[in-house]
Image 1 (tube, rainbow, N blue to C red):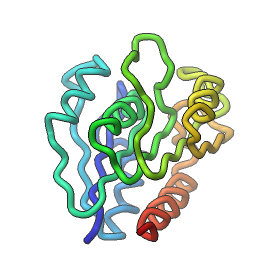
Image 2: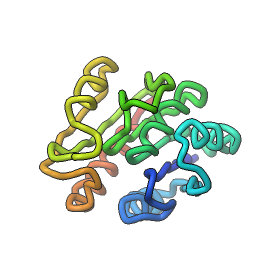
Image 3: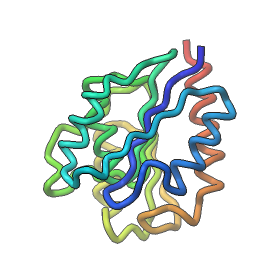
Length: 168
C-alpha cells in the first residue's frame, strides 16, 4: 500500500506553490496519496502545528511529512506526535526565535536541504540542528526558496521516497 505524504508550506507561500507542486508530482507518479493543507489562515507557527495535528492525517501505509521554511518547523514539531516514517525538510525554520516548540525529529529517515545563501534562516542554524539530530543534510548554492533547484529537489525527493519504500 502506498504511503501518505503531508506537505506543509512556508509562511508566505500556499499549499500548492512551486516546490510542493513539483514534489507532489513525483509522489503522485509513484502512487502516493498527497495532501497539502492550507495554513494561510494564521502566521503563528504553533497554530499551524495544532492544525496539522487536528487533521489527524489519515494513513494509507506509512506517513511522510514534508515542509518548507515555517512548514519545515511545522513538520518537525508534528513528527513528535505523528511519528512519520520520513521527514523531508527544505530550508526549515529550526532554532529560530519565536519558533519555540521542540523540533527534535521523530522519524525513521530525516533529510534536510538548505541554501548556503539563505538570508531568512541562516545555514549555520540548520547545520547545528542537523548535527544535533543526526539528520542527513545537503547544502545547495541557493537562497531561501530553493526554487532555482526544483529539478534537483525532485530527483533527490524521488531517491528519498525510494529509500523509504525499501525499508522493512
